[in-house]
Picture 1 (tube, chains in turn blue, cyan):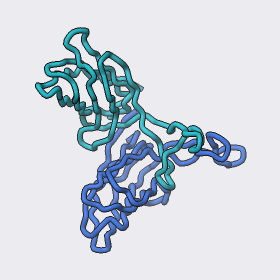
Picture 2 (picture 1 turned 135 degrees about the horizontal axis):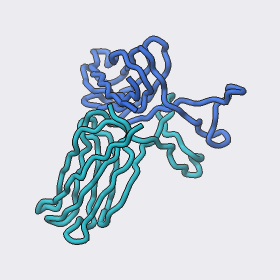
Picture 3 (picture 1 turned 180 degrees about the vertical axis):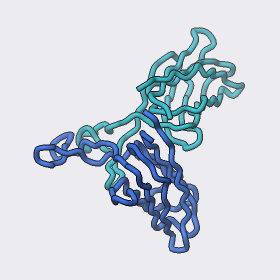
Amino acid sequence: MHIRLVTIPLVTDAAEACTAYSAVVNGLILALRLDIGTLTTPQLAVTLETTGVAVLTDTSIAASSTWQPRPPTHDEATGAELLRWAAGNHVGAPIPVANERIKAVIASGGDTKTGTLYAWIAGH
Amino acid sequence: MTTQRHGPYAILTDVAGEATVDTDDLSGLIDTIRIVVPGSGGIAAARLVFTSKVTGVAVLTLASVSASGIWKPEGPTHDEADGSVLLHASVLAGGQPVCSPIPIAREPVRCVVSGAGAGEAADFYIDVIGGE
């Protein structure tokens, strides 16, 4: 398993927002980390640029944080989400990305503030 | 899938009972951290904090180490919709997080030791699966 670290610099504008992209990547997204820098309790939305797949959404992030986003897996017979217990958390799996960029959108992060989003990708 | 063993990395505390040791650059999934405390002159009741040096990811925190041991640290996984931690059992039951090995790419792991005596020693090894 080859793991690559992708770095996305974040700089907000006067509207306290920014949109930034990685290079084109391929593989499984294993983890994300927001180095909060000077950002102030931002909202973070990470998606894949072309396909629009949701990677992570979080709000009011108070400090540098690490996530290992794992969206639901599904029963192949019914399409129902697989759960760890009745009405409980889903069984998750890493998100694949193929020949597209990771898109990071910051909102409410403060005026002209900086941070860094890291992504660890297994693959090429 | 290959496993690479990195180390030994030598810990030797200063007069304040502290030390900071960086590994070589590591890439892959962190599988195992093994600490070897010698029978004589080894660290006692030491706090060890392992992080990725550049990105600052928490890898392992040990509050009081006096003996050799092996740890397999894993980090929590999260719901992509809201960033909440995924649990094995219900929140009301105090379920444990669903964890996954911690990835690292081309950076050292830093071990910060505190709370030990002066001139105390140990070694540690880190096994990493895969590479870059």
